[in-house]
Image (spheres, rainbow, N blue to C red):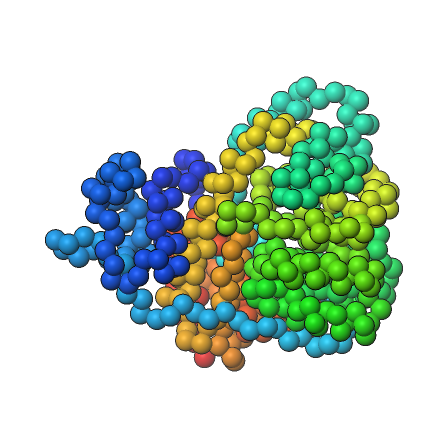
Length: 484
């Protein structure tokens, strides 16, 4: 496969620098309309004085904003907000999947397409993983080494499911900090979120049962449903607000639904964030029908605002919500530590965990518990969120610059995926093949649908620090998308 892309070297530190932070703050003011086209930015000297920064820091921030096409320098005058040549791209409309139930046959199709993202020589716009260089892996390694050296031999027994007591306590404290109180006894530690999701579906369903999913939906969830011999009902989903509650209510009336598998926070692949009023209505609707909900909340810690969004779990009063998450996207990719707060189904899920994989790696659980107990998690998350927010803005600007007229895209406020709807008639699978031949991966829309819908849509990953390589890849992708 021809490609001039090489895997990036790790940056000197995973923390956002002060100039990047200043650039992000200024960029957000521009995008929010607080700084308008033609307005003058503070001079370097004035910014240094008011912000107590060095001239080099301010200049680096202004150079970064200039390279992104957001500001321009006028000789003998200073820096000004650049006039935008066009309006921001519109977002896609509510999806409209067929209302019938579907048996799945997606795994071979998905595996064939996703094999490409494992190649480190491919630009990873289609990857499901963010850059590992955004995470404190070296520091975590020291915690892991210490845990392995000093592990109590009895932990090989005491830390069997539901898992390490201190780690479950630390996870319960995270729920408490985000507005939800639950007992550590409800939490079962798993080998990643995917194991948790599979265990939940096994506990709730039998082969042939119906499961509600969003449309589009994360392909790994569809694979799990297919493996268990289940059928799906796909529900229309808004790219900003999430699943259509009227359509869900109708589906619950028409079909014998046994479970729902949904993402309220930064849904993969759309990036949607369900409004709080919708969350309350959703939990009440499912309680009325007594239908359990598997809440896939893998990206919840990656929010861009000041406050974490509410989990559906925090609104549940009947134990019907099984809340699934992990450390893979927020802290420790590759460590494969996830969990589920399984409500009234905790005992059933715990027994299935024992019967299938017995236990989750003990030293890794201990290491993560120690890391969290020392308060290092929140410091890391603040830096990570800032970097991802910068990268989302870079991705959006690149789509606006390079993609053909008629393109629509989502602007997620968390996570690291954006959903791009290309002009009608575009073949996402053909685009995937053409891009891959040039060393660029994308995730074509049909892998996110039981019926292989969304043939003119793609999911893009902005979880990698922006670079000339990514900019060139986006330009190439835009040219390919514009080719009849």
